[in-house]
Length: 91
Image 1 (cartoon, one colour):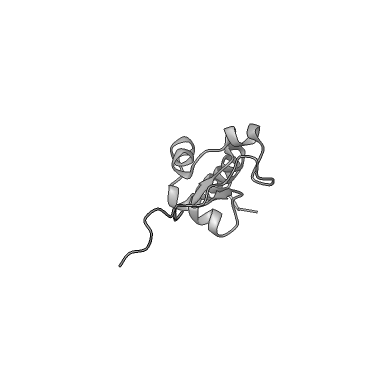
Image 2 (cartoon, helix red, strand yellow; image 1 turned 90 degrees about the vertical axis):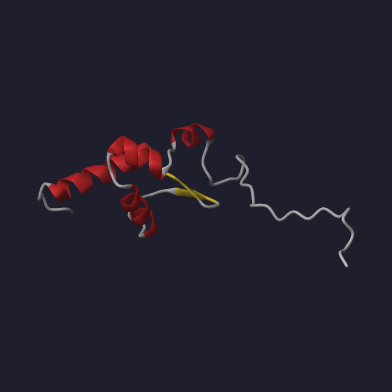
């Protein structure tokens, strides 16, 4: 037998409010891009971006299961990555 069908159960994904302190300001949030967008823009494989985030080498914001990256951080990461491909020492 099933219980009362009139009761509402909320089993959906949690929602992060735009006003939660520490996520980021509205101005900064508009500048953030996804790893897929960053991959296209900076010509870096998406898996390398995700791996760098997981290892703590690339600053990112995580909201539920989504990663958000700042273009300036990705540009710096891309410079290091491309310098390594040219044979220059990485600091």
